[in-house]
Length: 461
Length: 168
Image (cartoon, rainbow over all chains, first blue to last red; front, side, top):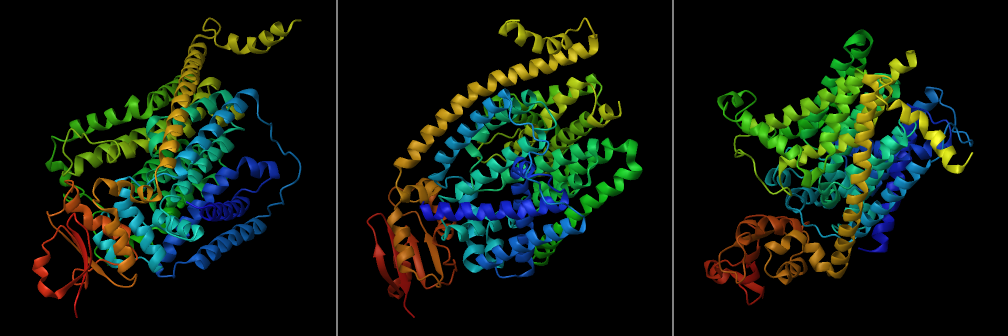
């Protein structure tokens, strides 16, 4: 760990923030600089998703990977955002305060707790060793290969575990190595600290004008201090970045369902593409969001469904080149060995699989009470009179849980009931996505419950 | 109006909205929301203290480790002699391939050493590529006599690890 490595990483992340800000201005417009500051976390993660997707595509088509490629990709993405903004008639951000309300006492108190927490996490992470198995066994070797060889190395991907895992995270890690000046696997943890900080700021920035601080911040803090989040969030592997993309995409779709702002669906599409290219589980989670959105918008399907289909199709299209790449090289491992329908030969597995998944979801020592809280928020919102948000939420959580059960059921090499150390337990990792999602959806649901209506219904009323 | 009365006046409408006697369904729902918030608000700070405490300990532990320990990380559970891998980095040129030949003859090996040392070496020695026909050999408890006179041993330790190069 050197100051040069940290400085390089900071500069690179500022560049990503700039890229994401340009994209956000193009997609949404920014009324004021305060507006930009509020949404800076969201802009940053949008930049991370855009850069990750673009670098993955470049690697697949054989563009040599290096510092120049990374910088030029950021510049190109930023310019694309600016051009789109000009074409859509976006105005320059004004210097005024815009509609910002400032931090109240509750928000300020919790913001202090969150900042202290993030500072502690930074201190713990900046000198952390690379101790997780998956990290050194295949995530970092893939990243090092991209860094050293400047390409996707056929031989290496074939030899490593999980060869069909997409290259977004290794590409971003390789970009971090370039920014640091070496393959510094210790300082690399700080890159994952940037991702977490961006996610926290994104959720706070998106929800602050929509829900009261008393509903937003305590839930956000509870997710952050969940023991598994504390201990694993900086590990240089894909799980938590996948969770951030998934949670933000699901939040944006939820907001779109009640507000119908086109930028929300456009940005969700990019984040879903990021999720799909982060880990193969991203396909499952993206499908849950899309199906839940289709069902929750049943009443307005004539106008909503084509837009949802376009967003989902765009996200899928961005992932197709990677599938062609690994398919053309006969890399396998994407699906269970028994095939998609082979699971019906194992009808003794679904019940123990469900029990294993539920046990992992409500494990207090890992997640505290986050998921029971999410369940309570859904019920309260439904009973309170809201419809769109709780229906959407119950479907996202329910379909994802069913998907996790399917994973355990169909991968018959996994012995049931599934008991494994949480550090390497794939089901615990999957459950993390719903916990992180709760940081974004539970405040919205509690707000809907309190008001007794979805936002759109309230406005009509 | 005293300060306390002013505060009470501010929160009175909110408290009133929680009263199930006014509107039973919404009152109960709002009570539920308030209970969720109260539980979350109580639990969060408790675990925040634990988290900050734990992270402080982690930071101290990480700071007291040297760079080798940090770089090896998970490898500490299977690498017997860190020097061997550092020597391999120094001796094997970056553009030359190597092979790992693992065997049971390493003093202090764990159950993870023999099956996983090749995997770990690939991570650690990159950009050097593993190749089963490589001239450079990292012998991790292997039987050196199997190579006969063809292997020129350039480094070895007392634990049974050696680095050599096959003669052309």
